Length: 281
Image (tube, rainbow, N blue to C red; front, top):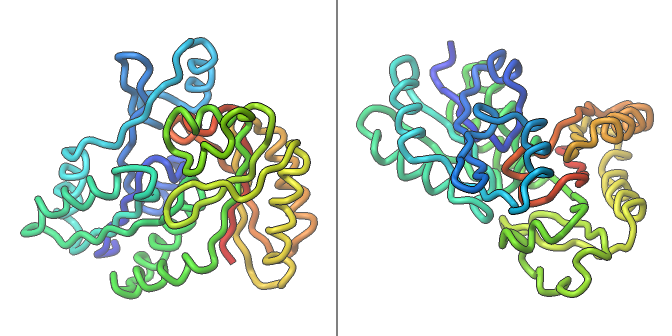
């Protein structure tokens, strides 16, 4: 067993069987309907979440994990490991990074914990996690793993189309949302992460134009012919995502293409129907 344990949060949306296979631990964020809080991926599935969201008048809210969950996980892993690397979603959209860091200080006499800010989310964050797990399994040092992850950031891209910007606007997760006030429902903006926060990349009027713009950006990197990991991410649109993934597999022989999803926490802010593509090259 590797001496370095890998932890991520639930918003990486790495399937449970893949986490088990790669010795990855997960700490869940919460989605809150009214007074009821559910731990993402544990108390509520993504399918249940989208059904619930349709039936409720009020939009759900989200919250970061309790500090005790991280502390508990660190202590548990300290029994069999020398170090821990925690890979979180962007610190610009969630307090999860800070919580993980604070919890690490509480156990510093028991185990060394490194916190890595992916500066992104969803399965693109998952690519960092899977790479870290692979390197840990090969016996690489924490310094080597963290250095590799930092280099990966330079070659990581993600763009997504929010089907209904009002979710992001009301959730306070979209910087520059005032640019869109008055036309929130009339456009399909392409968004991306910049300096750890979600910002508009370009405004377009239709979903087709939005997706073509994203595919054009992907093509610039994919056509170079070097190995590239691609994820097609959807908010309750599995058929559309799978169709798009098949097209990308056929087009790029150098690509590893997987379908992933916007789970409850990220789905709360993007809304059902959203689509995204992320890649590491």
